[in-house]
Length: 259
Ligand code: SF4
Ligand code: SF4
Ligand code: FES
Image (tube, rainbow, N blue to C red; front, side, top):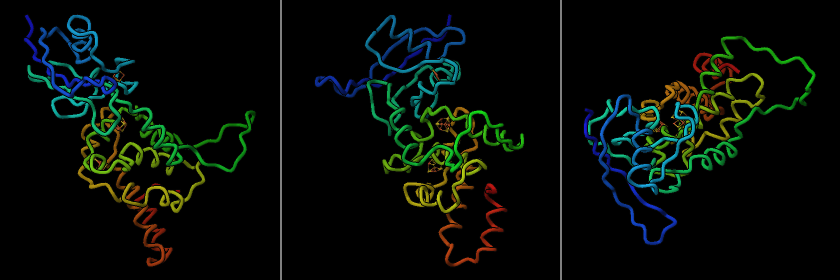
């Protein structure tokens, strides 16, 4: 027989004027290889069909099941109950718009933020459908792919002290996303162009560097490295008028992605 789990879940429906934020207790028996996704589905099927939470892939790919699990943002589908104490507290990710209970809208925030940051390859070249594809080294392609693995779950933003204090902070996922384009030789933007976008307190200079973002990232993306690279790039840009160009170029090549 499995453990008796006591699952305490945040409940609130912003669309219901009679709804008030509160915690609700549920009890169920743990089964083998039970994930939080399975536990929540069981609660919804046997105790309360009105419970709201998101899922799609159940495989850590779609990024929709992020929630705060015993105080720490994580993916419900990737979290097994056996790794948790028998009292589990589930809350929605902070920072994002609450849809209801454990469901938040990360999609609108990511779409708006990435549109604001110009999160695509900027090139003056016209697309030729019959032209041979542009080559890049395997090493560089792999480095870009490493950063492209972000599933937009929002856990890094929900764990970020700066994001919780200022809602215009772009978060580690966005800095990682821009680092991916900064690294990409097809993107014609210069360091100055990137500086214009993230060289401020809502960007890299707002980051306190305590790295909760990397700690909670379920895809283990090297956010620390990307934050460092983009911060140094922005810092060097900000002293453009003071430090000679040759010195800046040397430092840029030493510590940032070469462009
Ligand atoms: S290191 Fe920066 S982006 Fe990451 S959680 Fe801390 S303040 Fe937020
Ligand atoms: S960087 Fe990691 S934690 Fe942040 S949104 Fe992407 S996958 Fe999620
Ligand atoms: S359901 Fe897709 S990441 Fe959890």
